[in-house]
Length: 206
Length: 82
Image (cartoon, rainbow over all chains, first blue to last red; front, side, top):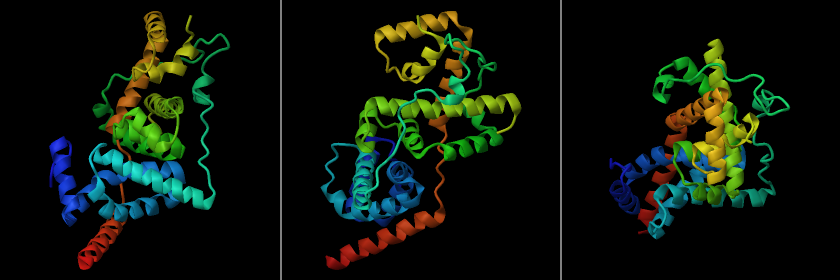
């Protein structure tokens, strides 16, 4: 299958999708579904996200012929999911409820005194690289557990920003949130993982 | 003068180069003087790198095959319509 990490590879994949090539669809489904699910989960939580994304893939078969390549394929697919998810929210009269009010995680916040100085500063310095940390299966499992417990909005923003390397503007557009709210979501999620890694390194436990 | 808590509020913005010049300089000044916040910032940066490397999303084979089948069905409908 084509290497889609390069622009040429993505163009080749798009051409195959336009021709209705099943192998190309299989490849694209495996490549893009994780990010599409992150978008759907932002709007619907776990419950309906898989159905929304499945419906979107069927839509893509017709829509791909109108794809002009102004945005990348990933961004285009994520916008399709966002539009479908928003439409579905409208029909069910639901709203996305997300708390953007607090920048600091309460657990981290409690570690500072009233003067704003540390009461309980971090004691261990994380010297290992991400690759080295991820060699530890127990830490990886703990990371998975913590990621699955993050509020959907934080997890979606994080996945789109860190894993899928979307530009901030694209994420704000796809998730329908302001830039400052996106920053809150990313910062809150990172703090949770910071606290998790710290606890793991101090105690060896998740 | 930026406090340690104040720095924690804007630490991710510093990591992602989202701060204006004044705030960026305030963070740098604070980090020069505060070893605790240097550790905090380093560890938060490590957490961000960890998240960048690690995608927790493992999709079930069953779900992927369901999508494959839907696509296959839709494609064959398209072909039969000509």
